[in-house]
Amino acid sequence: MNDPNMTRYGRFDQLDRSNIISYHTDMNIISTPSTLQKLQLMGDATEHEPAGDRPQQEKQQKPLPHQLPCISQVATPSGPKAMMKAMMTTACERNCHYCVFRAGRGKTRRLSFTADEMAASFDVLQRSGQVEGIFLSSGIIKGSVTTQDKILDAAEIIRRKYGYSGFVHLKVMPGAEYDQVQRAMQLADRVSINLEGPTASRLNALAPKKDFTGELLERIRWANQLRRGGLRASLVTQFVVGAVGDTDLELLSLSEKLYRQMGLARAYYSGFSPVLDTPFENLSSIQPMRELRLYQSSFLLRDYGWSVEELPFTSDGLLPGDVDPKRAWADLHLRHNPLEVMQATREQLMRIPGIGPKNADRIIQARRKGRLTDLSHLRQLGIHAPQQAAPYLLLDGNHPSLQLPLF
Ligand code: SF4
Image (cartoon, rainbow, N blue to C red):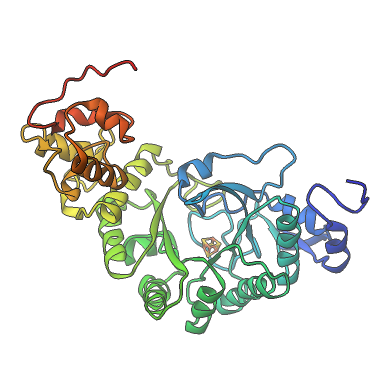
């Protein structure tokens, strides 16, 4: 790298000359940092907003040494990708009780980017091979419509001026206008409309200035209409779990409706953890296992054809932490009535713990060619731990032997 202006992040010298703006601590202007400094100061501001397919791992990841903290490894269907996850501003005029960026929280460093500055930063990172996509969110300043315009402006510049055709994930602000939702879905591969709570009263307890039906659910309806009208962007939402007595039954009942009726691509369940100097600072974090059980159940609803009534809720509407929901169902229904693998339908095969949609398809193909009589046959089809499936199935009429050949 002989160019003295080329950093490991690209030509930030160019950005810094043209895009210096102020930043604030406790809303007082104290300095004029460069774009690079602001990206470093912003840190992993979106750590509680997952963007990929493995949200729990995404949250735990720390940036690599010498990597900007806004760069996260995100799981995508085509493998892990480094993604720039950033906010147009970390200032906000709303007061969501759980949020580090809520209005009036003195400990939060407030930083803002212009649309040009954000787009140019991404272009530098993308062209230098540091990232392969962008997730763009924001605090709300001067209303949702003005804030949404800034996000859209940045995305427009990324697409038009810089000609970027790769992955863009945009946040839709609560209360954004119809045309803005439409433009976001034209520009992005994925949009987030975060419901935060599973009912209007839960949302009110979490975020008193957000309107569940008017500001959020309505935008989800619009996004669904727009998708049906031909826009390709997928739709995701996020819930803050465990701060205000929300139950798994509430969260998964709404998730099921959104999957079935609104074309939701996925729901994220972000376990609450308290932030100092917020109204919820003295509440307890939820157990990570609750998030895991919610994700497992959500996939059963979305990908396996389950209904929420089939999930093993306790009387208080929570999922048991000590057992995978699919296994709990199988213990109840299949242990004494195992499924015959040579005859079961695809849907029935996917009820067996350890067998997912791909494995069910492989079994159906394989049994057309010959008999599956041994657990080793299942392992050859890509089922990694067939002994876990063994109590719930028959192979050619027989309970399988749990003894697998070593080679
Ligand atoms: S609107 Fe968003 S950024 Fe603002 S306080 Fe609420 S959750 Fe935080």
